[in-house]
Amino acid sequence: MKEKPLRMCVSCRTMKPKDMLIRVVKTPDGIFVDKTGKRNGRGAYLCKEGNCIELLAKNKALNRAFQCEVSPDVIEGLKKELSNGADELG
Ligand SMILES: [Zn+2]
Image (tube, rainbow, N blue to C red; front, side):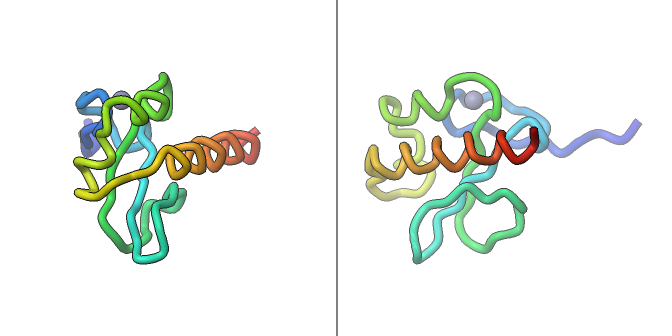
């Protein structure tokens, strides 16, 4: 049995296998959902399931992870990107 690498969700601080999480990356151009998992930049992980993204607006977990102010607009953008991604997966 090969163990999957675990990563911690910055929002609920639960350790989960990478494929249960989405990677968000901070680049000089802004903060994006990293669908490939290969983008350069400071990364943070969030649960795919549940409301961890919703909670970000309140718990400021991304501010801590990225050590900068993350505006509610950015979080809205991430939520949109994710819902688009879900459509692609069908
Ligand atoms: Zn979580």
